[in-house]
Length: 90
Image 1 (cartoon, rainbow, N blue to C red):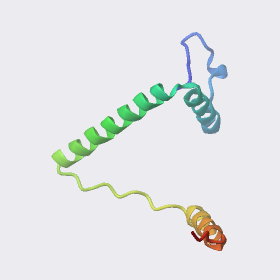
Image 2 (image 1 turned 180 degrees about the vertical axis):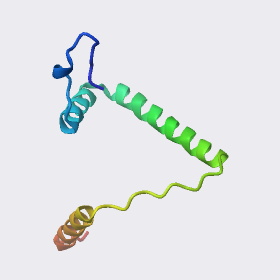
Image 3 (image 1 turned 180 degrees about the horizontal axis):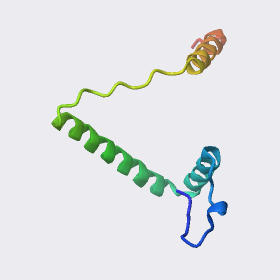
């Protein structure tokens, strides 16, 4: 996403993953909703092509990585907060 040109010295290019991610996120924020929509549509079409190719090649279904423990802890806290809220009655 970040714009790089051949005349930039390597020292000026981002080298840290966090720096690269920040630049890519900033570039996404600058996109219009239409541009974001086109990017999402391309990603979905590409994922569908990959899935068709895997199936055609006889490869097994991919197994997603399990969620890290920190995600489960976050979900537990959010659930507890949600359940602790008073319910509105109509």
